Length: 297
Image 1 (cartoon, rainbow, N blue to C red):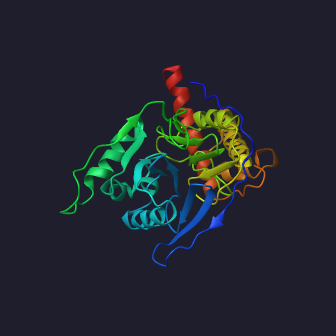
Image 2: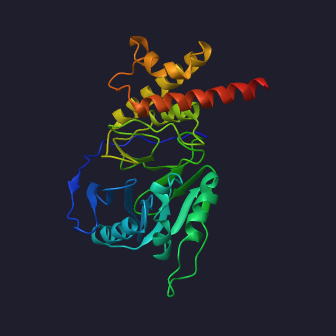
Image 3: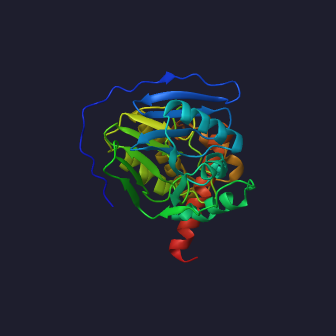
């Protein structure tokens, strides 16, 4: 599948902190006209944007309390009902609050590889006596595009990466990308998911680097720029190269930290700490399993 985006004039992106109640514990920013993001104290970012007569939300928060606080902020900023909630993937810090959004009338959208987990989170939550009947999740395989509205928005699946079911949300005219955990800003990517695919992730980031976007809203942390894609790609690519080399040279597990401190194995601006070491170990394990599968052993 190819993504073709027509180049548009660069839009000026603003990050204006909005007033948030003491109870909300959300740091809300206006990203562009009709587009917002919130950084909670715990869990993943929540994004939302106006489209036609409603709001599309990206990720549902860590839990019910954060989801309810997000709904309050959405009402205060966008002033329209939430029509859809898109899960970039079904990890709990992104999806824990989806029952609250569903109860408010949102249709939950995710990739088909995340559908079982999302449906479980949705159906296992307590139901209020006056709640509307629950609906299932809407699972997509490759893409879903909103046309004919005030804003064009596209949801894409580009293959396995951080998980087997990562989705991105692209606002082409606004030049904004909601990347989930595929792109990070000022932190290390997390390559330790049970279903991670570091080589697929590298391929995805190469494709994202070709998009005409100015602002990246990541799954965690503040919004970034195209440089966030470049930096994340450089890290994932280096970890994949290290994994290949460690397998080839049969580096013992207890020597990983020492090897990663060698000058040729260092990653620029990355501390050789527990998170980085764990990422390399995970990449080695995944790459070794891939090689064994391809060789039939």
